[in-house]
Length: 175
Length: 238
Image (tube, rainbow over the protein chains, first blue to last red):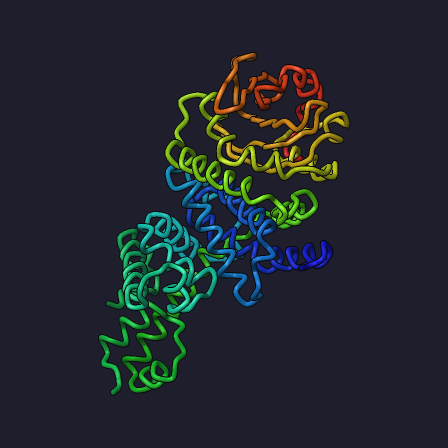
């Protein structure tokens, strides 16, 4: 049983290590800054209450993602946000990009938000959290080959969107 | 057996940063494979750049504040109470999930409180540091005065019909009650809501509105002066 001090220290370490990635994940899942913040806070509130059940520190990231995914399903899945304010969020080093590259990012962001959840979810777990296909398979409860297929198709759709919007730049259709 | 070009393209299309020995061997097997891998990596870099948004600066502080105000799960809760709570929470979760397009503020209040309101009341038992309350209120362009600050035993952001609000538990001489502050929502002052064992009173404020929620045995009207006098507009953008 942890002391209150140990508990707080452990909780703060989790917050420092994972809050940013969880926010990114939430943001790209729901496309709304305020909802994403609420979702992350709710995730950590539940994590705080259940912290004693986290026995393996190495499993913390997956544990938090699972909490967030459940909270998302429970709270937001039927409440489709009225708008997406992805354009308002601060994006790292966007201002330093050439206009074409900025346009590409814009198309990619909108493309990600348009992806069906079955494509978007594995893609976010891979890109935002750096999950392997095996980890995504475990997190989503689907086979590794299904994960590979969905990841492949997700990228195909994004590439097609870039081509459709005429901002392919030096990205060529690979397949 | 080495993979062919089609298999390689599918692999790097799904996992562009794959560094397994077999993948690396295939990549180095010809210029065609190498070019395809480089192209997949270039796309991945763009994708990562597009998704690499910054978290709001206040988010970490808000999360850390949780440990100062929310008690951990109680382990000594009698089994019978725990079981009944589980059923209640399950039922509340169902209601919450089923409705999310509220027809009225009254429907929102009942739905929102049913989600986890009772649980938060049961768990909130020590005062929240005033600075944490003020930080959340400031984010909602509001502020709370000292009379309210000393009574708040739990506070968090919460969804409201018109954006973000605050869910508070406050101590009163009748026991803990809940206040939902809705900075962007207008209500018919004095409207009442009854649900399960609870009742709520809607109060118009100088800045938005609030719902005061208590058990039916509690007199929610008693809290109206405190709520009206204590929740004020703050500095916009604070």
